[in-house]
Length: 125
Image (cartoon, rainbow, N blue to C red):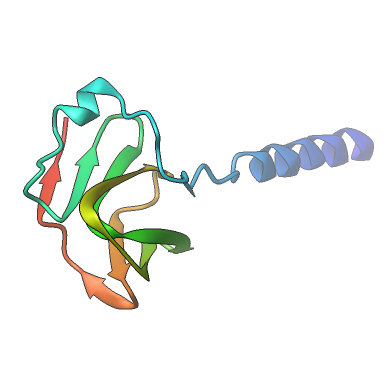
């Protein structure tokens, strides 16, 4: 009887551990943008968030500079860092990143070169 209870407890513990896997990720810059997302991009916005279903969002940033990204998570907040390089192109470039969220994330903070930034446009589907 003790073994049966111990086995049930162990199974419960293992199943609880496996459900805590995080889906949180930020892709490298997308080369191919889905058509439904492309139609929602506002070319006049510098920084845009496009929410889709299934905890996926797209970050669109327009700049003449090269961008590097970093992602941090703390409780219900996702912190996205966008850092611009010093090299500048003559042509404005659209940088699109796919953000996969966990259901626990409710707040998305973006930092541009270490300073808090505000989305010019937030779109949902």
